Image (cartoon, rainbow, N blue to C red; front, side, top):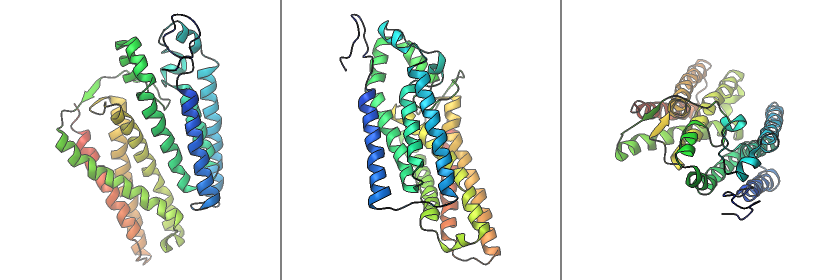
Length: 310
């Protein structure tokens, strides 16, 4: 544990592992910008995506700074640390680590400012770094210090993504490991296929998107991808924490529910794309066929796991 105590009797370090983790996330962002923006120069998007990425990036940067400010400056977190009390009100009722979340969101916004499709992996890497680091450091310290109080708080409030706290009952599945893997592996293959094909549409620009109709359908296909990523982010977070078989209703819906919704929307949009493509006599539609397959796998196997929770 870091030895940055302020006074006698204080059980937790004032700054935690924050400086090291933020430096690490910043280094990931910097390396990604150098590699994709200057050395390889791949995945760079032009108008209108350039403007969209910059607008969303600006919103994320401002939001991240705001969340950090509320968690670090406008709260009395320092007093709680010094008095060894668990803070669960204010912004800490919405996210357990607002200061780290603020940095992560701001870094994601900085990434988007480069309007590069491949740089979208950087927030995912930073999120994994943040999640694994917190689980193996500060969350252990807090659990040792506060015990059941922190365990209850942890089940109600997100680690990294600000969200309304959940007060609903816990859902549990008794599915076997073998059956879980039988559902989990093809489901993961499904969303990976879908998102990989979608990314290829924007980077490789296959011939079929020269049609404005099909291009519009590909743009709509981003919506299912967002649902899928929300589900994966929620479930990976829980899986790392070994809580994926015991989930509050809200997290169950944000996890497997989002994957099911993403799969359904992906199938609908891909089917529309195929029908429209054949109507205009476009034959090179392998990418959309693969997106249909991926969304189907994502839907069917996420649904099978979702139904086992009681």
